[in-house]
Length: 306
Image (cartoon, rainbow, N blue to C red; front, side, top):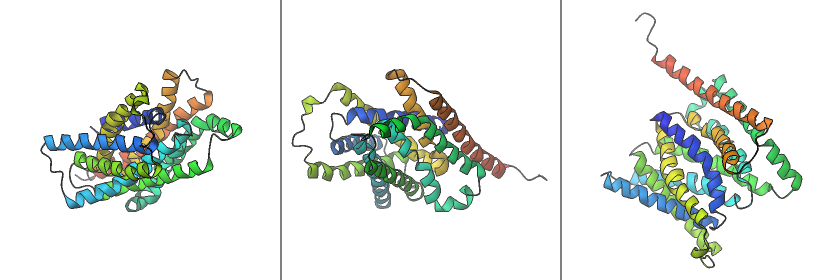
């Protein structure tokens, strides 16, 4: 189950940058966020009710609402907003700084993480690999001007911090109750948080539902069923059963998936630097997971005299 959940988070979330950019081409950003998470939340709630799960519990709802707003409204909502003007590849490289914030904000694990040379080295090597992966795209965007906006990059930095903070809050405060119930409340809370933006910006006034392309609708459905219901639920569950640092390695693998999508579906060419980035990122994930595996192996090893 752990391997399956990691596979979903690594691969599915790597593709969501591509589908967000396709969807936001026809949907206003706040409306896109509200529709995505309302639909996901309602489906998850229906599933919980049909499964006989208890969905009402004041402590659980409170914690789920807070983590849902941090994760999905700020963390994911900022990505939706900036992908109106910034290429998804550059968004991916900026958001990949999330593992750094996991280490910095995860106070209960400070002694463990900062003592592990493998984890620190893997984290730094992973960031270097992401730099290799997108260095040419960033250079080209900076050369042309207007491709990368400083304010948007600062927002993406805030998104990474918010995502790490929301993940840690979910891990330490939302442990009670099932993953499905927590995910349902997190998505519903995020959907509600997008509504004021719709009203303030007047996105509903000039929006023409009939003008939305089939590609945008399909992208929306992909984000609902795969990005939110499957991907986010797997992520929340992984936070319960694995360390936040280990789960955060998704941020290194997602850009790999983004590059491969470009190669296979957009006929993009891969350069030597990108190949080097792919290898470096995969090596960093291996290093971080090996550190976790060795620590668990030492903790379960029987005494020498037994």
